[in-house]
Length: 353
Image (cartoon, rainbow, N blue to C red):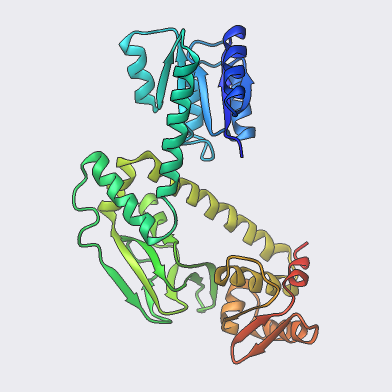
């Protein structure tokens, strides 16, 4: 797949020449002639790199850079200024705002392709560092330590083993750690005054949890319990904040995770408000199946207690039992001592539409 490059430049000749050079080099190019148009195209097309003039009508290059850094899906996109100015103050201002590089007019094709290739390669390497696994976590620590001199980030980091149904933290506790799941599965849930439980999310290997109350400076809004035997890495709060302050990519990663969490929570509230009990039970089964298997398969077995399905779907255990019986009679699932085997995933998924 071609890398997508957005050029924002009000000089028509320079825009045409730069576009031609990049297209010959095999890049997909999108162009805009002012900052406002460029920002709209960036939001729509999610480019892999932005080349942007500084002095432009409507919105200058500094304004474009500030705006992209405040849009989660664009934050962290490599940003290279194109400028005729050579004063140190202008370069310094751009770098302080977060620009990755500069091209000073006039530039030749060799300089252009060198800068573009270098920035795309570096950004890909950074993205690869932040894979959701324990190796990615250690690389993340090491990069932050090497880049900003933050010491002792990876040393003395504890790994906690928790058994099935053990609590990791309780709703109302003050946060001290960010947790990274090495193995097993953990459910986040809330309880009402009568003790009825509602599962907010099920997390698995490679997921982080516990960071939201630290970022909000609040107490835990949910409780966390192991569904299976699990191992979690404990990242102390001071080390977590050191990571955020030492590396923009790390901060962006958690911002995106927060955005995804809010979107999923909103969708779940809509489902609880409008979906039938049958549909909600089907959605709960599908949701859990995806936590146990990445690739889609028509047949998959996993263990899930009836009360957990009830907590996920927001309906009574008795109603869950009735719907599971219906699904079994329709040949969609099989059940045996808490183990659910999905026999027809596609038909279950069709209930969501």
